[in-house]
Length: 75
Image (cartoon, rainbow, N blue to C red):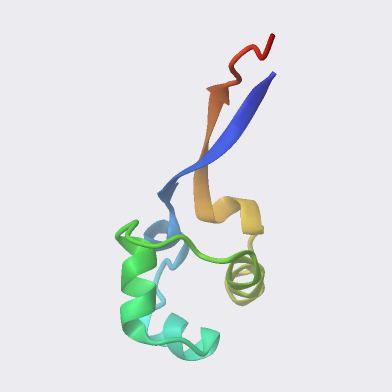
């Protein structure tokens, strides 16, 4: 069995034609916060991914590439 880790943020792809500034306005956050998410400097909270998925009409799981990491055997 493996664990999952967040990889690269896919927000830049999900925005499509919407500007980061418009997304920030709709999310109720600063433009710099959106920039940090897009540049993988900060992870979006669960609440922000759900809110963003409603704005962008996608799934919360779509915001990040998920990476499977093997679990270490704990014997």
